Amino acid sequence: TEGRISAIESLFGASLTGIAYSLFAGQPLTILGSTGPVLVFEKILFKFCRDYHLSYLSLRTSIGLWTSFLCIVLVATDASSLVCYITRFTEEAFAALICIIFIYEALEKLFHLGEIYAFNMHNNLDELTSYSCVCVEPPHPGNETLKVWEERNVTARDIPWGNLTVSECKSFHGTFVGSACSHHGPYIPDVLFWCVILFFTTFFLSSFLKQFKTKRYFPTKVRSTISDFAVFLTIVIMVVIDYLVGVPSPKLHVPEKFEPTDANRGWIISPLGENPWWTLLIAAIPALLCTILIFMDQQITAVIINRKEHKLKKGAGYHLDLLMVGVMLGVCSVMGLPWFVAATVLSISHVNSLKVESECSAPGEQPKFLGIREQRVTGLMIFILMGLSVFMTSVLKFIPMPVLYGVFLYMGVSSLKGIQFFDRIKLFGMPAKHQPDLIYLRYVPLWKVHIFTVIQLTCLVLLWVIKASAAAVVFPMMVLALVFVRKLMDLCFTKRELSWLDDLMPESKKKKEDDKKKKEKEEAERMLHAGEDTVHLPFEGGSLLQIPVKALKYSPEKPVSVKINIEDEPTKKYMDAETSL
Image (cartoon, rainbow, N blue to C red; front, side):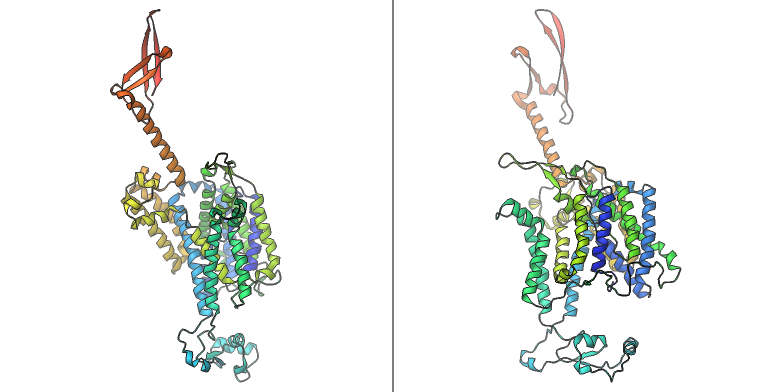
């Protein structure tokens, strides 16, 4: 946004919204953040305002207020009940899109550094002594350049072009000339390569420390602590290394005082500003698209958090969650702060960190999952500390930007794990004998699994193409269209096949239940075929009744009841006995 919304606004907005959500939301286990789809919408809106010369912050405020109102309307009309239509198909396509956005944006930022810190790819080592780069007067100054000179009350003759620094030459719109110059200024030999090292080292070190829990070194408590704080430790290590090496890598730009990054704006933004009056009404159209995006993003994450296997004791609170998100979205819009909604990756990590497991008493015994510590303290403390970091700007300015880009790459790649969609993509190039024992492969033909995957992949590609094209404004509608595409798949697949391919129940649980059913079936069959195809029923007194298996109609899924009439010889009385198989 060219400095209109930056780090200080993000920290302050996250703290303000997160504290309110942690205190009053129905499901405080959900963690709010700036998600990929919302950032895509912000990017589209900023580009639109720049192309049509509109005030970005003012139009954004209008859209935010309309979106807040529409979210409250959705709460009042019980729209959250529609979450029952959000299945694994929609959830995984949406989650995959978020992961790809994180990965793409991280790599794009790294390539952008290559344009800023360009290096000479055609060096002649024998002529290095003759290389030079000087600033000269632009041969054909444009209107923007003339305006800058006029504002500074100088002319081209008054400017000492040969004695200007790089930043001064750029501020006067000078031109760089020489064999050691690129389009944007002098070649910079070391910065880009150092940025690449920081970027990939951050990614690999974060991945290594996250898996440190499974290593053999140090006590369990130490390994768990290192694994839980993997990203934080990585950032600290990389900041120290960057400081010791001394290469001038680009750093995180944060103001030293608690004030907006852009000096031309305040903490309260007018919905109209410099825009025409009709933008207040027209803003309702993009607000409708934004509302769909906020609703889908919030509720998909909430559905994941409120899954049955998490064994939550308290209610879901879909309506109250959406109400808090809508109200705080309006507050953030007026204050010119980023919009925050439930972040899928952060919320899942939060829930995993609060799992309660049984203590293992016997060697080799696996701990049993007992539930989740349902409370508001952890979320509240996260956002309080995030707010206090606003006053630590003197420390934050030492963080290199490539390190943050590496964290984004790690977040995108690590979130791909556990998504069944990517497991099914791997099956395309995998021979049958090497395929893993996936539960859906037991009951669904492989070719139908491939068709399901191709449909999901096509939807994901369409989402990405629309996001990157001129039609990006309809991106939220395409996210909603995933639900309708899933509904149409009922025509191509049977309900039984869809129950295995598109069930929200986790893979491991389904596999355990299936193995349990198979074991029970095998035991029942073994009992029926024991003893020369007869069933032995013991009675009191040691007598044994033998029934031929052929005389029984047996189903492994239904119990069989057998009624027997017994004559007691001493008393000449008859008794009826009944047993189940």
